[in-house]
Length: 146
Image (tube, rainbow, N blue to C red; front, side, top):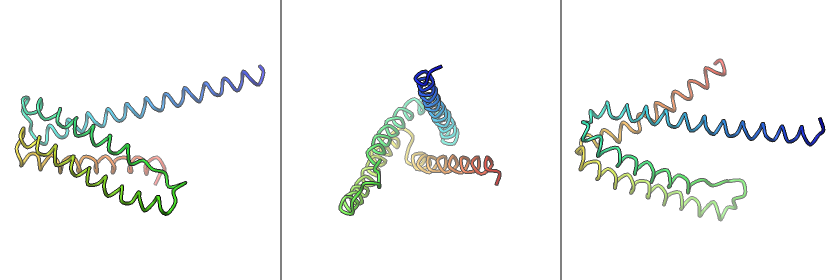
């Protein structure tokens, strides 16, 4: 085998590993999302009719929040002090937008499931996220043998 064939093989192997890793991440995201849906549905005790109205609203909320998070990805490597100062203000602006989005969808949810269960949803959403973070940390600790 010549060096060109070996390099091509290595590049192809790395590309396939990257694609496989992306698929695995997507599968994990989908699994976590389905667990979240089941968790919230059970805790909120949604009827079939309520669930049919509630989950599309939730999905809109999730999509808007995801789009907002994508705009936050900044690198500190090449950032000047002036850029950092502007980014600080931008960060606060994003937090305000985040809150505005939550308010908008809380109002929509309230129309479907009432204020008490909307309040409960907001708490459950945070509780589920915190639970997932704890589980990930625990798995990492277990893998390291600590």
